[in-house]
Length: 130
Image (cartoon, rainbow, N blue to C red; front, side, top):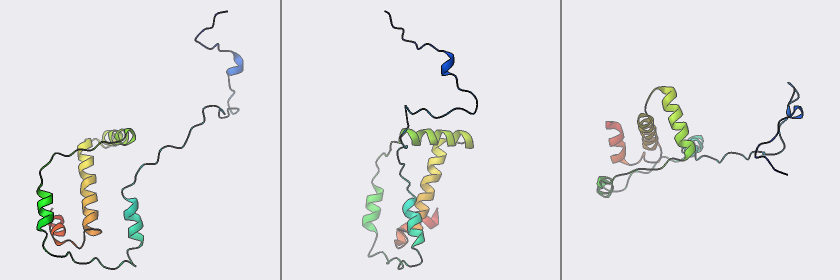
């Protein structure tokens, strides 16, 4: 007896309109959770009324400027899902992925200037000048 690599199709495989049910085989699992960088900001924003004001930045910022002046190339990897979403958003918005990423970084840095880094005078001065 020979076996064929193809399944035979017959009328019992057909489903009538309205009688379709999900297959018990091949159930899917939930998609992998994606890190949301703004989840901390949303949580912090809800506590903003009760939070104490930020403390002033102690001392000069020379050490920060030296660390920020280090010139090194920088890159990061996107997950497959992030890359697909970014490509789709760029296509739908008729823009480039680089422009979308640049806007996202600007939004994150402006958010940091208003929250976690609000007490740093040198960071706030750079944010105000941009």
